[in-house]
Image (cartoon, rainbow, N blue to C red; front, side, top):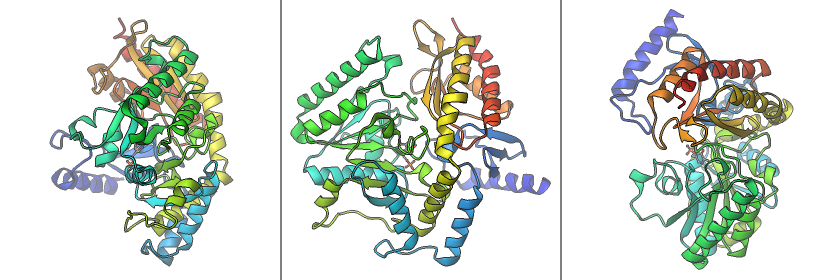
Length: 446
Ligand code: PLP
């Protein structure tokens, strides 16, 4: 409506005058305005309806404005908006019970944070205090958050300007079959070689100094590269062998994204700590946390845990989490994500890959897929260099938007990450838009 458009214009002016945005050169930004969103759709400042194939930052797993979650937030707001973390609160207790129930093994206690980065910070702090060691092992080609330690365990270009050499983080090469650092030609070879490399690095760095190893169960922003069979089992064995706390970062992959509640369930592995955020309540109110094993809990049973947050276990966020988890169960949303992956997105993307020479690989699970674009299938030269964009990728993204889709793009990849409850028809429509737009990148194939 005209009123909405007017409100959007005013918001845009004020944004450019006063809002400082994440990860951006401020003056050259041209952010999209969104005042309205529903389910798998958002409306831009001109009132154009776009199919959200990004789930924002891969967090609106339940879509926008789910009525049950909105109602739970409203109800909690009417009852009690906030209460200090030292008190017992019913919304917090129930959210913790549900998260513990979903988590594997003996991970049974929940420390709530405001988001993913602080969950990572606290998980590492717990590991350091539990082991009395300092170093942290983390993978290249990973993302773990934007605060100082979280961005330093991150293995992507955003770490580099934040690395002051004080973080105690050691990066290793993860298993990544499509671009194997180890020259592997099969998944079995990649698993074996990546694990040998990891054990060598542990031994060379001195296991007596290594507190934690943090790994996304399926790395997200860095490329949704599903670990080959046996890799995470091997990581679990090595961390156990050397007394290292295994932190599974499930901030993006967790809460149904891969078609299971936690991605690590695909691999039958129980870590020592799980970090979560995003999908726990689809980001309707900021929430994250750490799920803690019995052994690590025991470290802090008689000795104070030296950490906390004013908003740990915020009632509005926890009420939203309870309603989200209940709605996901009632509506079979995690099952739907698994079904979409097996029957719609997976087969659809494999067909697209056959038709388009610019597609190097498609891969994923559930509603969590990547299309890796290349200039040459033999050499696998990426359509944009690592850490950058390219005119080809920019043209592709613009075409997707022009065709009515909001995509998630990273370097030479387009991620297919719609809300988990997106209808089959909408997912098929999104895949058609992608299919058509890839004619652009095909033109640059050499
Ligand atoms: N860990 C992973 C795997 C993530 O994908 C993210 C965010 O994208 C984070 C941690 C950081 O979460 P937040 O942005 O909520 O701090």
